[in-house]
Length: 305
Image (spheres, rainbow, N blue to C red):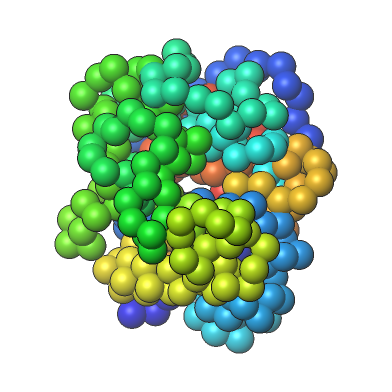
């Protein structure tokens, strides 16, 4: 199966004011292939691209940049805020939900509409898969499984913090990563690795192996995780967008990050448009003919197949 991909974008800083939602014309439609979005953590563009500790991701990236392989596109991406939480909220709802500068959140705290509500109303199947989460619709702030598996964190969950999801049957769509089956992928999936597999890591002394923040082994572990999962998902026919939550500095809100879109449905060609996390939301909404929420209304949509 031929696998194509894109990868990396940037967009100008967006106003913090809340714009009106804008309707995107056209009815919702079925996807040509399942879409999986993966969010990695805490590494900017310059820390990822060209790093020998991430050979798998860089091989995909270079195929796109140099047009030397089946991955033929690469993109530019910027995060919209710091720290982690507001970027997850931005992808899900078009706003940082008054959370810039904090990772503090509880289940159901945010009474806002999200893309998950939109997909449900449109009859589009979706799941949010969380590695290390112990049970469906788990409401804890964190969860430690074993010394090797790493930690689940609510601040990296783009669904359960929203009240309309947590207080409804939609919360049954927020499940452990172990529930993901390549034989029955939903049309839209969001996958968060645990804090060891997503490049986040822990300070020295925390109870996880090969997971110390700032060490080469952490990036190697994340790259191996991506290779293992992306290989299986694209083989099963899914298109996969990999991005990071935030970069270094505050350029365009959250700094420059790497992003890669790969899979059998990704068209050939390069794209020089600048994107942010709001662009990911806009891309999903455009794909299914949904209303553009919040800052997605002024963002360039990621060209999802």
